[in-house]
Length: 521
Image 1 (cartoon, rainbow, N blue to C red):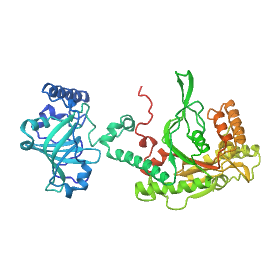
Image 2: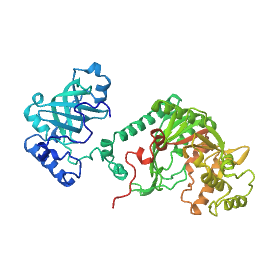
Image 3: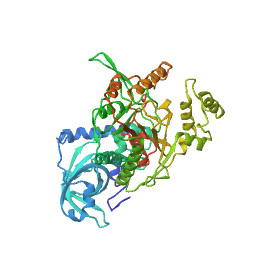
Image 4: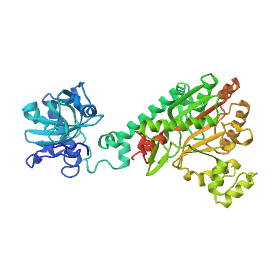
C-alpha cells in the first residue's frame, strides 16, 4: 500500500473512538452486516440528508466546484506544489476521527489523497458537520499541500464542502465487491471499490487510441458506416432483428463492417478503417458477448500477406506504447510479440496436430470417413472444406499460444475471399491466433463480381438448408463490385479480445464496461 502515513487507514474502514462508536451518525461507516442492517443504513443516510435540507445545506443544490489540481498531479509534482493552495474534489473513501483533528482519504479520477482536517482551521460548526459525513460522500477540499512527519503527501484542509450525499453505503474494504455478477451489473460500484478495474478500462482506452495513432501514420482514414441495415452480411452469424416504424420495414443490426467499407474502396478511398460495435445473436461465455467492438480495415493494392505484416507491426506497436514491452503475460503464460509470428497453412496445421493430411483427401466422402475415424461430428451438408475446419477447431486451436497466422482456408468457409490461383479449393485468407484464440481474420478480398454472385448463391442454398448464419445476396454490394474494386487486403480485429490479452483479463466481461447480463428475475 503506497505512502501510508499516520492518518492513512485501509480504504472504506472507519476508525472512531469508543465514545463516538455509540453515535448513530458514525455507525454507518462500520463494515456492512456488523452493526446495522443495510436497509437501516440507508434509512439513516436519508435522515441525514433530510437534516441537511432542513438546515439549508442541501448538497444537491450545489451546481459546480472549481477543481484546480488532481491528486495524481499533486503526487507527481510535489516539489513544485508543496505549500501551494489547491482545490481538490472526489469521493471520501476512509476517515479517521481523532478529537479535534481528523484524516480522510479522498479519491478522484487520478489517485487518492490524504486530507488533514483540523477543527480550528475549518471552523467548529463545519467540523461537527464533517464528522457526520459518510464514506462514499463526494467532497470538495481547499487547502495547502504538505508532507506529514511520516512522509505522506497530503492536503491540509482550510475549507471543506459536501458536494453530493451517498445514500447507499459502499462495500467495505476487506470484503469488497468480489461477486462477479454484481460487479458486472453495478460497474459504477466496481470502479469505485476496485481500483484495478479502473486501470483496466484506462488501459483499454489507451489501446484503442494507439491503434488509431498507428493506422493514421500508415495513411488510413477512419470512417463510420450504418449499424442498422437491411442485409446483415460480411460474417457467419445470426443477426438481431428490429422493425423501423417510419418505413414499416424490418431491419437488422450489423454483424460486420465489411461490405460498406469495401464500397468505400470501390469509391476510391484506398485505406479505410472503422472501430465500432457489431451485434451477433449468439450465446454468452468468457470470450463472447452479443455486442462487441470490432475493427475492420481495408487497403487497396495489397493482399493477405500485406495484412499479416500490418497485423504484426500493429500488435508490436500497441503493446510497446501501452505496456512498455512486446512480451506480454496472460494467465501466467508469456507471449512474445517481438519475434516473427509463425505462419502455417490450415492443412499443415491439421497434419501437424491431428496427423491427418488433407492433401491426400480428394473427395467429401474421404473427408467424412476421416472425420468418423477421429470422432469428429459433422452435418450432412458439410463439404470437404467444412470438415477440414472442424478438424482444425478440434485439434489445432488450443496449441496456438504464441502469435500465429493460420493461412489458406477452404473456399467453403470463406465466401468473400479470393481463391488461391494455384489451388482454387483454398483461399487467400488467414486467421491470427494467440493464446488459442482467434484474434483477427483477414483476406485477399474477392473483387470478381461474377464469382461473388456464385458465392452468394451457395450461401443462399445453405440458408435454405437451415444454416441461420449464412449470408443473403447483397445486390447493391454486387453492383459496387461491378463498378470495379482494385485488388484489396482486408482484416477484422476483435478489440475486446486484444484488450483481454493486454490487460491479463480472464473474461470478455472484464473489459466491457457494461456487458450483457441475464435478467435477475
